[in-house]
Length: 119
Image (cartoon, rainbow, N blue to C red; front, side, top):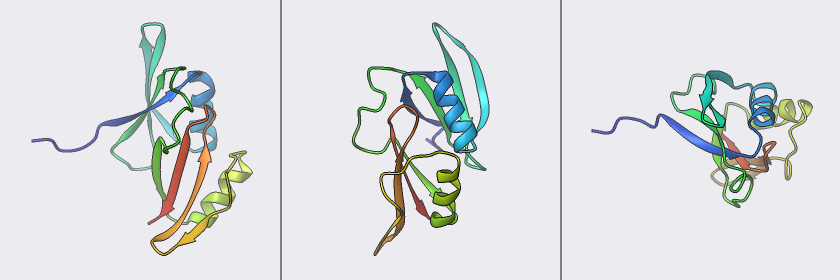
């Protein structure tokens, strides 16, 4: 029986640039970083989450999707938004409160959209 999601892939054009963004700006930790053919297999861990993020080299797909590549959860949307802005993350707009909760959208270093909401 299937038990959990091991990882989700995020297409990137430049693995080095993406790794810097995800570790320095979002606070991810490197779980695995090893050679894989002409690129690298980079798995990142975010907080205590079991599911890891893979920065998969795929320049043809990086930043091309209008749907968020990742949907994350923050303990405090406004505070997280302010902290990430201070680290240089560029948001499409300030957090917005909806009947279902508060959320915000930004792009990573590769142009992939990332959404986060509160718990």
